[in-house]
Image (cartoon, rainbow, N blue to C red):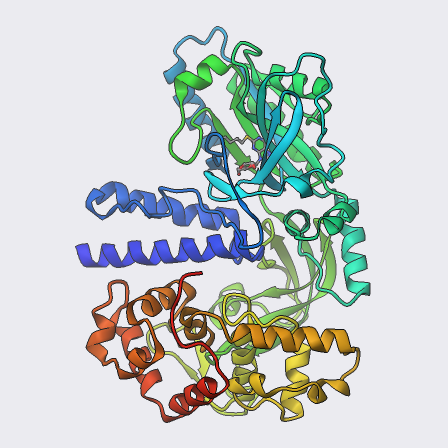
Length: 585
Ligand code: IVH
């Protein structure tokens, strides 16, 4: 029993860390905030019921965030906390009753409700009224020093507009990009052949964290204050007074806040804002309900991750109907076959959506969905749009899984354990190979810049890439007759290929795309085995001895390193000087 709970806990931890990385590091989340919160809830519950299994490094115990190598680190004066999310009036009521219980006297208790801006949180420090430094939230304790980038934002005053500034004033707020600036930026990016941002939050994060400050300046970012980290305690008694003062100091504040004194008043404003949510010039993903009085905030207190005196109410996902034009079959790098819905393009939250994930064929059967049907589409935050249901059935029945792989024509098999999954088992399948190549060059793997899917397709077609090692044999000549490949671009790609030879062993391991082996486990394994030679000499027991490595993965690893083809690949990689040892990054 205990063992299966431990397994579930390990799974949840891995998943949460993976989703944190996708959200914070890659700006490309796979699941909605609600789905993420459900995973956290489950993990918290299991840890509560099994306190001996709670570890300090559990995602429930710390704020996740990333700091890159490009920026200096900055330690926050006091931790920049996160907020607990609620999704229903029942959850708000539960929180509200708890506050009432803790405060006891209802007489002065006030709440302030503010829009929750969908941007990225930063902390700003003012010394004697002058902006001296600012950083991203990072892990809550340590963030990235983006002082110079923040100085380019017009709504962040360089000097506070007052004759008697506080000696030390540290506040936090949200850097964001308005919907119109976001659309304009995406248009420009596309014209210049760059990848566009999937939503204004990612655009704001990507634009602020630029090494070249000139780029940040051009991106037209904005800033709203929402809280303080350090100020003169005598100065204000309430959050509303703090916001008013910030306005006088020259900051922009959210004017759409309301002060409420009862649960009924809170809910009334929630409904007003639900109606108004699309009319804002920037994205808001919910509301933040805070206790207005600082004396009560202090009395109620904070947990290690979030204040107990505030809670976020997240808006439900936006929905729209459209026609499902076609269902395409995709073959992943491990041979998993997934259906992809091609839609009549629709605009939702300022983003044009032309495709949606269908997850698997079981989902198609459950939804009784087929090409031509009119469907209801949902987009929660930044996540890939999802089909919720059929609203008008145009064809009969549901779309059937193909019997043969659309790429290599081999028979498709249903996996035994997980009946929903269909796979192409042909290791030589071109679609799988293409996706293995895309994975090999990706950011967490060898991080070779400049290789889009289209370029990989062209190089494969021209037979310039037949194995993973072939990236290291590419020369200028292989690119010259490709459209839009000028000398500078080619040189950048070739430089990036050379740079990638220095990646630590963990990245190379991950880049191989071994089944079941994610980024975190690659790091654990590389740290234990230290170099490639040790991995090649390891037996099944050596892999199984590692905490966190189950039998299934151990077998995959053993089989991988026993393969003749892999031996040859590694030999070639060594010959071209690809690093084979683990070192700290
Ligand atoms: S108050 C102690 N107010 O939402 C935490 N946060 O999901 C103080 N956010 O990290 C946060 N709008 O970056 C607060 N009006 C608002 C906000 C807001 C957006 C962000 C903030 C926070 C995140 C939590």
